[in-house]
Image 1 (tube, rainbow, N blue to C red):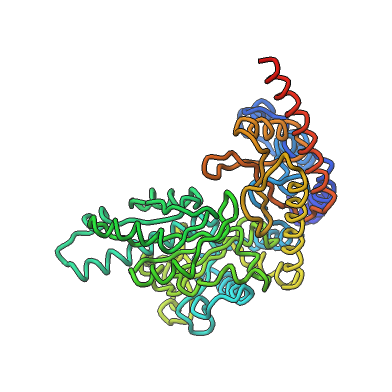
Image 2 (spheres, rainbow, N blue to C red):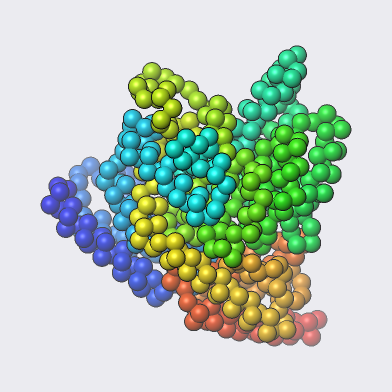
Length: 485
């Protein structure tokens, strides 16, 4: 393919993607395929001779689309949103075209510098404390990671290194292995599984802190477990607070937890993967109060800020904490500006070496939507979730299981877990909408997350009518079965 054909095919692909997104509501939200469907549809080996673009293009609808779950469908209410917008897609095209691998400033100065400035823009939009911003000569700063899981892992590893060095300076007789064996990380019993995974990779113990009846962790619960562990000779070193938990979007109490972490020399990381985007709206910014006590903070613009995956924004108060944990300087990566103090080499802030020019997506989206456009997107989703909550509350057969704060509603039929599992099964087998469940304490709960950029009130009403009808059918069969017995 030469440049002339690329121009032609590029236009065709843009048309295809635009048509796909414009008419996505006509496609069944969840695919009708079984595991292994794809292998028989394609050859066993790559072709020896080139094939035409037409042949490849034809196979998109024939082979790929039948196995796609349509995350951007207005009937997709599962997980949390996966953001997408036309400006972000265009920026991703440019990123692929430039094709730089921005591991250092010298590897592509614009790639590094735009990222630093975009993370400052984003930090100011959510009113992050000044210490988290790079500015012209700040000690903090932001970086784009691939996911919130990576941000948690990076902060845990940096905290581990920092704690080991501190404890060794106070107790020179202790080996690194002895200290490692005593380190403990903490997170809510509602925290994402990626926090436990970070501890697993980091080779440290992790303990759950019990959440209260609102599924939030308060200061007294953390203090209790810390006191017990310190009395046993363990070294608490890391606490991951969650703002907007995955099961029910609950918020840990930063204003209670932060001072405890600061006093005990514990690194506090805040995972606000989903909820963080909402903090651009003044009415939701209070949910971030207490961030001033944190060492690192993360949220995903690729969830709810119209920037498509991957773009996970992470800030640290002291970038030297990250660089101190990960810095290695082989000769082939060195450049003559690196010790000037004027440049950032992001390879020291992350697990991989290479990195894409992801800040282009932020730059395009922030400029072409503006803060007000993004605020309206968030507010619309929150309005729709309250609309769904209202519909649920009008039906006495159902109950709401957690406070609706942002775009997630947790609900269930009053009754057994088996009944609710059967309801979810009938919803997802009908494939008109798509939902996933969670457990809240011992209760099996259905999650309704407002996800698509194009979702409207009509889609929410349709979803509720569909769920309500399936519940009616289900309850009739259950009652019938009860009478039979």
